[in-house]
Image (tube, rainbow, N blue to C red):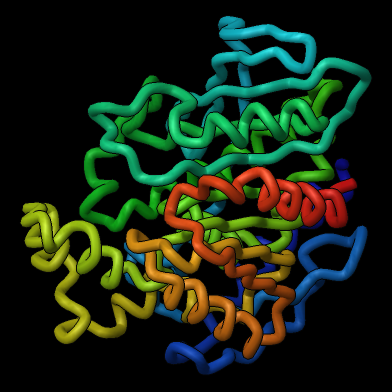
Amino acid sequence: MRVRRTAWAAAGLLLTLAIGCTGGGGEGTPETPPASAPATSERPRGTPSPTPSPADPVSLPALMRSEHTGSGLRLGDVLDRNSAYTRYAVTYEANGLTISGIMNIPEGEGPFPALVLAHGYIDPDDYFSGQGMPREQDRLARNGYVVLHTDYRNHARSDEDPGNDVNLRLGYTEDVIGAALALRESGRPEIDGDRLGLFGRSMGGGVVYNTLVVAPGLFDAAVAYAPVSARPQENIDQFQRPDGDPLVAEIEEKHGTPEEDPDFWRGVSPLTYADRVSEPLLIQHGTADDTCPLAWSREVSATFEKAGKDVELRTVAGEGHTFGPRWASEMDVTEAFFARHLR
């Protein structure tokens, strides 16, 4: 555990030192990778490319340059206990914020591999802790995974971050990175901090993409199902502009439109940095999804494949955004994928 954790931090430091002498690159144009160590010394990883410089403070490159922290995983009240697992209210620290969530810990002898769950969009005013992926939380814990479902900042008992929405919710990526680091640093005997997976749905699928390019090597494998677009402007046009969301005007006033400032919008798209991804990625998307078009996942898959990444797009005939009749069989696929990479 100590070797892998130290190696990931060292690789991040090398990347930060390399930034000052690297040039920018446009979307789809691979940048020259630095001569630095792999993200972990335990097994080969893809070598991350340097980040563009200078970077807008609201951008994926800015997150790449940041020193991310995650610690202080604390188990609170027992919310449920059954023969398979115990469900706890939890908090952890991520980059100076306290983030709440729930954790399911399986019964039996650990340590167990751990999964961070990144939920889809739910109005924070209506959200309650652990909401969004209850089926997945239950099933994965029953099958031997520690499950940490993060609430994200501005949700449930998490700390507030007033600028997060106008800054395209990039803070959620920090919360997921912090969750992984908190799991790894917890020292709890039930948790194997060297076997970590990331599982995101809908908006959480977008958080998965961001995390893979910001912190390559942190997780061992990732799954996104029914994910949003990897281009934030498409998500705005799909979900916010049609409803007259006043936040759109604030975003465009601060960051400009894609026509006014294309460099900014390239800098917040994980497609621009596909060459940084080192983890295997499974994308599951229904052909009848009228919330998040399948074309969005096709573009991510094609872009990652072109960059030489281990990505699989699994299209699920007839399934909509929430997955109904084929949810159980697709979870079989999800678990088999994690078993290959985490067991």
